Length: 106
Image 1 (cartoon, rainbow, N blue to C red):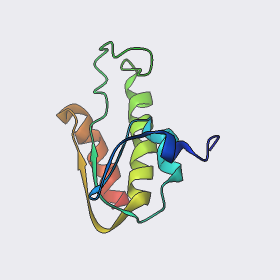
Image 2 (image 1 turned 45 degrees about the vertical axis):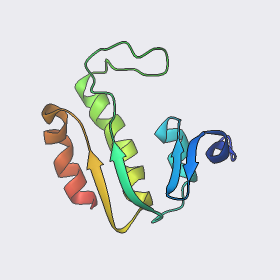
Image 3 (image 1 turned 60 degrees about the vertical axis):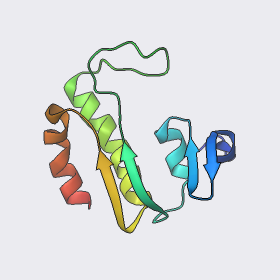
Image 4 (image 1 turned 90 degrees about the vertical axis):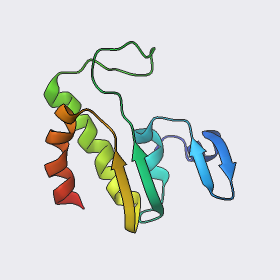
């Protein structure tokens, strides 16, 4: 990780209930302590070729998209606390491919 202060620099909202960060999850998750997150809600780009600006590539070939998803899923599983919940919001096309990967990881 290039920036050890990324967790503080990316805070968008902080309350007694938790902290919301605005950042690329693959930049921030390595700084999060393992087994420390009770609930994860992932809503990644759907790989439909939409223009989200310069920060998001939403037009990848299928294999690249699935491998990219597996990278952040690995990090989500690592930070998820025992008994925690992981919600993955995506198109059925992608979730059908990602479900077996999640089943092996959780």
